[in-house]
Image 1: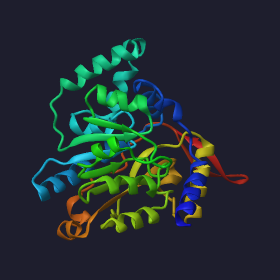
Image 2 (image 1 turned 180 degrees about the horizontal axis):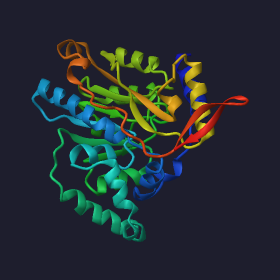
Image 3 (image 1 turned 90 degrees about the vertical axis):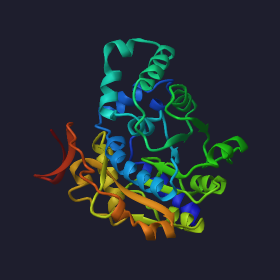
Amino acid sequence: MGDIRLRADFSRINESKAVFDDIYAMEDPRAYFSVLGDLDYMIPDVAEPVVRQILAAKASATGLKPTVLDVGCSYGINAAVHRFPLTFGGLRHRYARREMRAISSETLVRLDRNFYASWPDVGLARFIGLDISAPAISYATGVGLLEQGIVADLESEPLSADGARVIRSADVIMSTGCIGYVTEKTFSKILDATEKRPWIISFVLRMFPFDELAATFASHGLVTERLTGATFIQRRFRDAEEFEGSLAALAALGVDATGLESEGLFHADLILSRPEADAHVAPLKDIVTVASGRGRPIGPRYVHIEGNKGLQVALEP
């Protein structure tokens, strides 16, 4: 019953969100960077310093370079900004150039393979990925951002034997936006396939409840900690409808949006799940220091202002 209710809740909440399915169906990430970049999408950049600190703690505990499974990896952008001295914003400007927009996808993949190979790999982990988009996985593996990729919708289908072999070695599972589109069904299948009890790094929009996921992780021997005192901007709201719908979803959960989503920005919480012994030795608050999880959006934001007819939505520059 809990599983059905959770999927229904996520589906209802997602009705308030803009749909960007088309940008994940392309053979390269130019549309992805264009559409999301126009909304000041920044979660890969604000999450990366935190991910780096957690991966450093994981490596320190084991003495090994961890393998990270990026769930909902799309075009491998989390791997790009972690492994190389690059940012989402910088990559966005690269693909916005007129010369880059004019070439074929085949040519772009070849150029990007050479582009990433030219940078020093400063990452603390190996990356593999899982996504429902075959073109995105093909690009991410083709340019060398991911060592291996799995194309699967684990909400509606079982994990294949080949997929299980890829996932088996994962030490860390991370996601920066897929929770809400996937539920504990996906993560349960992943955890059943892993050889170890991995750490799970989740950046979760505050409008999505995490209780069922935490319960699933607990059933696999993991305890869950939520970082307090900081949130992480994902992007601006696309339009007034998304703004008001998201505030309504937060209000229905009893989550106060004042000063956060009320300022026209999606905010995510950082949640870390791992074996209790690991959490006891190094609590989340001791391994993560956040200078800023909010960044500095430059685009116009939807906000509420007091008007003649009460609160009204306005676009604030």
